[in-house]
Image (cartoon, rainbow, N blue to C red; front, side):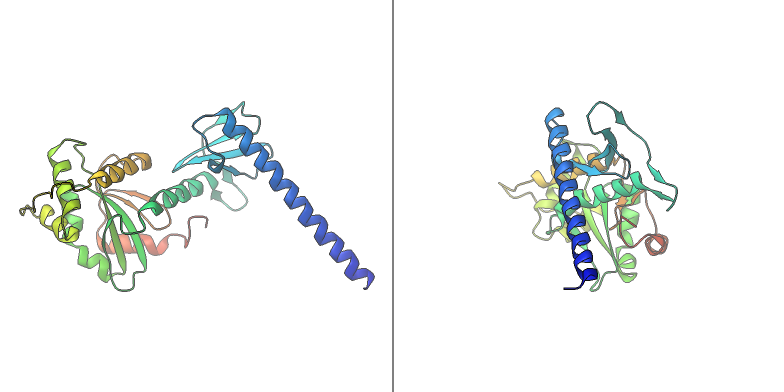
Length: 247
């Protein structure tokens, strides 16, 4: 074995050992902080480029803690060298993670055959701008945009539009029922024993994401777009956005 090869191997092993030690040290920091804050899980804690400072992320909510748990900081962390807002990037990742809970058919999706983008839209069946968006659902699909709706009845639990949302969710054909609801057509009666808890899950997820009105759009990279966007405008926005939430 040549001296050069032995030196390279030694350097590689040293680097790997240092990485393992660094990971173990960070795991200890995560465990310590999670033990100090009852609402914090170790999985909510991430490394940052700042020595002695960690990022805490729960959904799109981002803050920073010193490793000893003494100081909490809120605000944007910006990398001036790359001109990236690391806090906004983390919030976008948090939105993507939160919405991944609904990837397995737990929303109401109107999709083209080969979508270029998937957006999640929090919608209310009686909201005027929500109806405007849905009226042009084919235009969104034609531009390669798949629309996944989550039900967000603005009146809250017990309201009339909450009752309609439950009827939509319980319908045999949910997509058709949503279209009917948005065009003031009659809805099928809610079957006895139908599990409507998903409406509450949709609603609570919207609250965690900061939804305050409808429609509210979240892109596939986690960018939050409040309000209605026509199909062409939304397609242009999606085309200009980074290819992933970490840029």
